[in-house]
Length: 140
Image 1 (cartoon, rainbow, N blue to C red):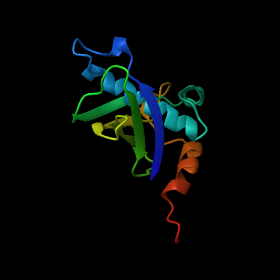
Image 2: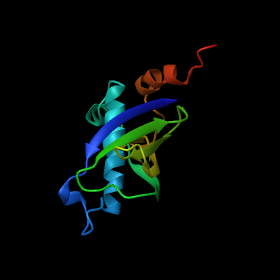
Image 3: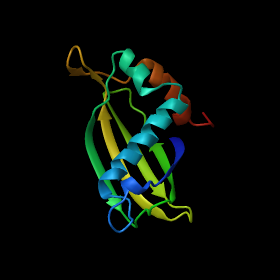
C-alpha cells in the first residue's frame, strides 16, 4: 500500500456562505493529493503527459462526515490500496481536520490513456516499477 500526505489550508474563496468548504471543492483537494503523491514517486502529471500518457477521471465517489471550515488546515491522505499494471488506478482520499477528525472520504478512478491512439493503455512501466516496492511483502 502506498500512502502520501498533503496539507491544504481552506481558503475563503473555497467556502460557502456558512464558512464551510464548498462540497464541489473536495474533488480539487483529492486532485492536489493525487498530484503530490505522484510527485513523491518521482513524476509529475506534466512528465506523464510528455511521455504520451493522460489520466482522465472516469469515476468519483465521495462521502461527507463533517465540514472543513474556513482557515482549517486539512490533511489529505492519498492511498493506493492495490497495484495493477492494467489501464486503471484508484486513489483513495481521506481528509482530516487539525483535531484528527475524519471529514471526508473519496475514491477517484482514473485510466491511463493514449491521446494520439485514443485508447486506454496500461500503467507506464516506470510508474509501476516505482510503486511495486510498496506492495511487496517484507517477509517474502
